[in-house]
Length: 377
Image 1 (cartoon, rainbow, N blue to C red):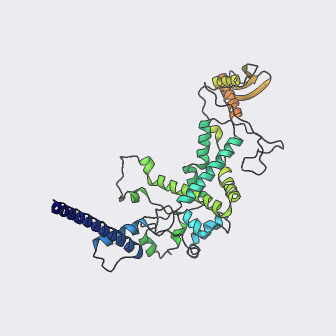
Image 2 (image 1 turned 90 degrees about the horizontal axis):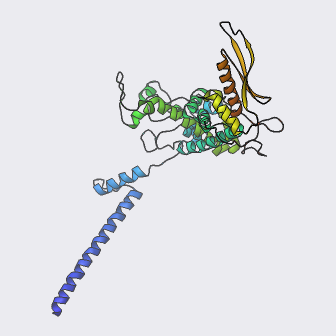
Image 3 (image 1 turned 30 degrees about the vertical axis):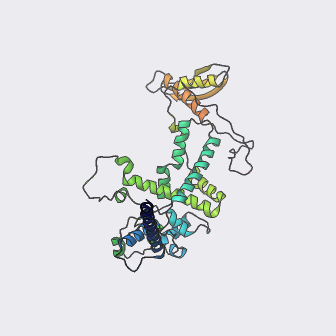
C-alpha cells in the first residue's frame, strides 16, 4: 500500500515538474520575441516566429515626425502661402505644411509625417465657439433652423473649401511621381500643396477614362466632395496652428478677418408659408394691447396695366413694416414678411451706438436681449 502511494506521488510530481518546465519555456520564448522586437532583427531571419514579431512591431510603432523647418523653408509654395496669409513669424513653416497634410501616417503616401488631425480638431472647436457667440449676440432672435443655416454658411465645408481654394490660394498635390520626375520638379514643392487620399485611393480603385460609376451614393463619396473636405480641414488646421503658436487673440482676429467678415444673406434664408397668420401670432405672444391692422398707405395706377400698392402693418399708431406689390394682396403679404424680418433680424447695439461686445471680448458686459422662443402657428 505504501509503495503504491509513493509511486502515485512520484508520477504526480513528475507531471507538475513537466508543466512548470513548459511554462518556463513559453515565458523564455515570449521574452526572446520582445527582446528581438525592441532591439532589432536577429542574425537568423529565416526564423518565422522572430520575423513575424518584428513585422508586427514595425507596423504598430511607425515613427511619426514633423517636417524639419530647414526642409519646409525650401518649399516656395509654403513661403508664399505664409506671406499671403500674413502669418506671424512664430507660425512655423513646418506647422503650415502639417496643416496641408491629410494623408494617414500609417499609409505609404504619408512618409511617416504627422497629419493635421489634431490641428483640425482644435480649429473646428475655435470656429464653433466664435461663430456661435457672434450669431447669438448679434442676432438673438433668429429661429433655430435659420441659426443652423447661418452657422453652416459661415463655417460649413463648402464655405471653408471656397475660402481655402479662392481666398487662400491653396493648391492640390495632383502631380504624379512620373510627371514630377519628367518636369524636374523639386521634391520640396509638394510639401506646400494640399495632400489627401481620394476615395479611389482609399478603396484601391482604378479610375478608367470613359467608365463612370452610376450605382451607389456618388453625391457623398465623389472626389470633388473629398477635395472640399480636405480644403475645409486645411483652413481649420491653419486656425488651430495660429492658436497654438500665437495665442487666442491672434486666432480670434484671424477668424474675424476671414470668416465673420463675410456677408450673410439672412433675408434669403427665411421662408414664410403664412406670413400674416404668423405675424398675428407673434404680436399675441409679445402681448401687444392693440390688434394688428394692415392698411393701404398709397397706390398708383389702379386701373392701369401696372398698378402699384403700398401697404403698412400697424399696431395702434406704431408701424411695424411696409411692402409694395402689384396687387393689394401682394402688398399685404410683403408688408407682413418685412415686419417679421424686422423682428427676427433685430441686432442690439450698445449705449454708445456700436455693436454689443461678445463674451470673448475684454470688458464684456451683457447688453443684448434674451429671445422668448420661436413662434408656432
